[in-house]
Image (cartoon, rainbow, N blue to C red):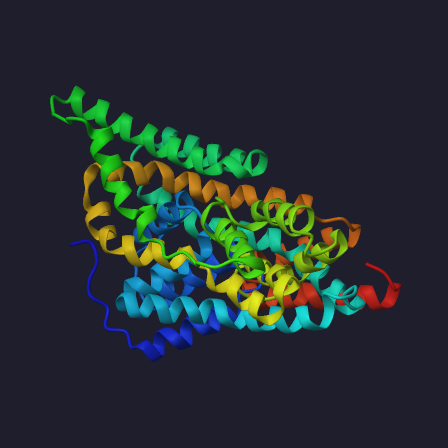
Length: 395
């Protein structure tokens, strides 16, 4: 067996995952870092390799990877009930905050201080991405089988995240398949048999997928059904999360259904960036614009991420213990870490003000030189943004 039973109370899951849901500013890089600090470094509930494997698997599944990782970690320590409690605790705090802000600000431009906080925290987010990737690199490097291939997979993930982010999943799958093929050829050269390794590994990995018949669809018509469909696409049919989901939502909310103007959608994106929890919560603002509070709650509640983990998580122990799948994950894992580093490039491209680059530099100093935490770093960036916005009268 790869991992031991972990007797964790539901109260502990609720408290710890709720804490991350409240302080998880900065999107997936921050969530990954906080989950690793909790589950690997502080509590020892997961070992380093298992956590890297979970990142790799969640990155090749559709939907917001960091949300699926949070749900998986909760499932790992307390089973299905823990996954439901932990996943809800991770999502709900940010949902409440973003709906309150939506009620106050979607109808008009957000206050200057809110925009300043978002721009300041946004300047620090690329540094958080680098920190998250660095925290995962050590264990992956120690567990490598072939140095040259490990570097190649890391570089492939980095390049893909910085250039073709929407198709990143294909690169992760390709790196896993490449390592599987390389191990198979090595074994055959040693005289071992590895019959249909690729096909058997694919069958194992399909244990994590969810058959269409397992999803309970919302039956109805009108606006609420449309909100549910948009939320399902964002949560279940997009890969990579983060900024990848923005054009998908914009096309539906602004151009197709006309629930929001372009300016209101930009406000929604800003609110999604300055609130804790998953960035995908921006869809709650879209739901609110379409159908009020009911639409906002519905958009967040349509969460295929729970289904992926609850239906597939029980296969994870068997999957990662299989040598063929182990080989696949040893290729996909470094690529996923490279993608985290690569996300820092795309996040940096979103910076539009010169002072944000100074915030980025300061965040790197805080995280790496002074060893300060992610939350303090993001709050410091937000504070700088508020001061600059109020002092200059613009963002």
